[in-house]
Image (tube, rainbow, N blue to C red; front, top):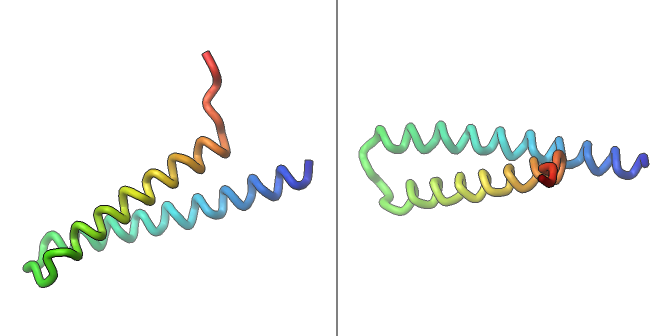
Length: 70
């Protein structure tokens, strides 16, 4: 049972880190969108990374609290 609790705590910590990185990317994307384009690839890369983080966040949230079967 302790192992399950530790695993859950690790998932929660990882989830918090991913959400913080997602927020940071959101801020960076907004700032980059409002500035003149220096590197045409930076914005798409940041958006792709943000989407990947969103997918990982959703996966971990399902691992922590799985949906109930109908």
